[in-house]
Image 1 (tube, rainbow, N blue to C red):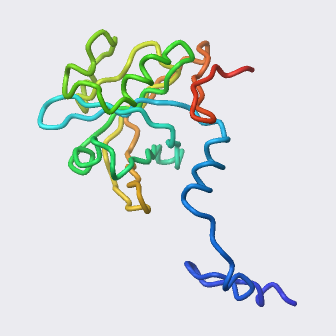
Image 2: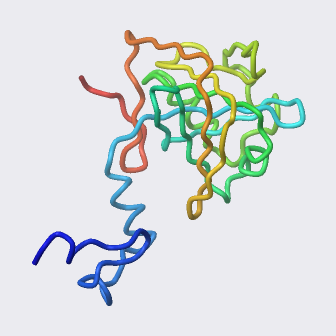
Length: 183
């Protein structure tokens, strides 16, 4: 069998895969949950008020130009506001910021500026988005694209500013818990 016999067209299953059961959403969620990921707080301005949410699916997707991607759940309460945001902040949390992660992950958190009460942050002079203090990294981004991706939307932005603190230990999310990175 040659390599061309096994190639498939984008978006289609190879002939040998037809009739094979695909993994369920719960299978993918369970398997993905066992993989360690960083934890960050995505911040935006919505109707002039700051909003934030905890995310664990984010990545630099290009270094030149510098592009940052964040996956936002369509059923999340911040999703609709993300659709209209001109820019966003992404603050990658340190191991000491578990309570911050929990606060911005809670569906019971207050709305608007109240969700930032007692959380130190600075305001980006460019986007106006909050950037949390004492984080492993901060990215200040201008939104360039929103890409529908199943039950999420991928928010992609040009990083117009980036700062890092390699002296801090990152917070990880694995098996539905927050953990300290061990290096």
